[in-house]
Image (cartoon, rainbow, N blue to C red):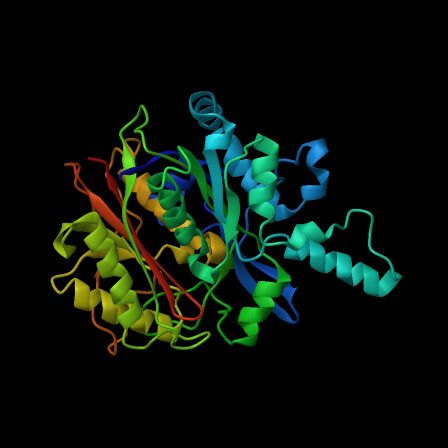
Length: 398
């Protein structure tokens, strides 16, 4: 069954709506990556923060307060008319919510615990529910008064890619007629210090697939799609195929040959009934760590021996962790959108120095153009701790 992605709301370091994000994305603009102190002791790190004040939660939703939910609210407001139309068409009990997150409201919870250690009591605004992984879905379903299934998937950096897969299954099974799906993650000390402890964070802008790559940058984002069985009014874009694998090689390092990544990509192609040469663009996971880039380049070179235009968008956004899968699927959506009249693609931003140990890939440059002739098929990869691999194919709907 075709899963139409009929509306998209997003916010990230590139901008606060689709138009702003697309403009900066296709320009290869890394201006949203800014150095900040205070996250990790004695270090100043580039992070992909959303700048400016966020929309406040409604007064009757105060117990759901977190920056994570504020980001989610901002993405949701962008497509509120489409959501209201879906409610009118299908009813509140036929609309589900499936989101990916790895942070939820842990930053606010951490501040509450720190207050408790100092003052021997929690601050008035503290609520344990802030840190529950299910908090974003609970907030959204309660605010919109939806009574369909509402839950969160947390599989680290594949969380929101898996949320899209699960949303499609809810449609396939007839449990829902529409699903709000995507992901949200927020900058917080927990993740920045955790990745620092793994010696995985770069003090410079990340440099994927370069000889000089030395780690990730971390960012924040919220992405929300309205997925339905029915095409919307504009040019239809759909999730056409998805594949997942769990190679369980190591808790924090990928299987070095790329076997698990390759399996996920092949499954996605099989489910979309496509051949590798039909893929017009590949958004790489491309974290700029030594092992992940090495593994992914091997897998891509194996699957696409004649090459495929590809890039990593993480130098522009940072790695948005639980939101990354949905965010990079959104970049494919923006590339296919009729608003992308120049047929641009996200360029690969790096220092141009290839690693001789890696197979060469076909990098997207500012001059690279996507064909305007439909159907077009774009792939996006997400890989996570524990060997958890997902590949999605977004394309012009049949």
